[in-house]
Length: 347
Picture 1 (cartoon, rainbow, N blue to C red):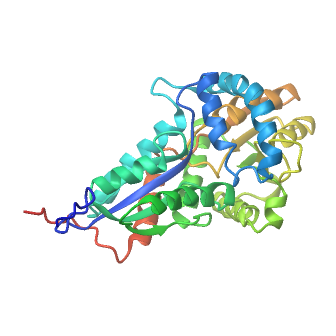
Picture 2 (spheres, rainbow, N blue to C red):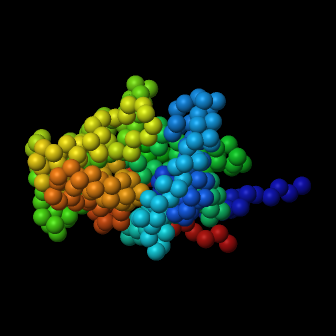
């Protein structure tokens, strides 16, 4: 009796290595229906909303998914580009640039992007890598600071795929890179490039995505890692303590989240007479709703309405050369010991 091998795993198939870049996700379109589908998946993740399902489901389906999609769709529409969702566009571009950068260094690996929520899903991308013959996969979540709601959730999705797979490839994971020298250097270069174009303001606000305060008590190192990133970036930029603030954005619900809040800080700075602020979002490696709408649009409005004069939102790392170089070096370190040269073609 002959047994069929899974696609990409015939006995004589060459051994291939791959990198899977994972980002949070995005709706397929800036419409209420598409946003509702996205939010239903995102907010149903128990890693994201740590409330017992029996209590949360009625709120999610009875209130949140009835009211929030239309408001969020309008925000997405304000930042949607000709090529689609900025987060997806930039993440796919990072994957393409990383593939080229690794190739230039002599590493013939596959690289694919995936979204934890939305498309292309982690399952779709892992299936594609397996079909291409990948027998070793480095999972690289694009979250510099570790949180259960982001990195661990991405690994949950990888684990769900593993549970369904017959033959599982070797897997490695990059848990975080909050203090990686290349990442910090890329952040600093990005800020400095902005200052070279626009002049330097007297106050730099480093805004990280927020988390419920209880996540720290539950064991997340996120807050400590954000503080470490901010300190290293400030040192790299030569900033004194009075020249920068570390804040947290994107609060959801009534619970206490990590403080100080970005919105309140922008308002307070303006009322204290600070005329110009520059805002950088070190926790986001690609521009998205939280940077382009919440900061560049809503944050600007908050600061100016409170009496501020000039507001600058600094673009994320996106596909800047310094970031792609740092990403390639990060991947190479974690690929050590795995074959990454071009495999011979099977006859």
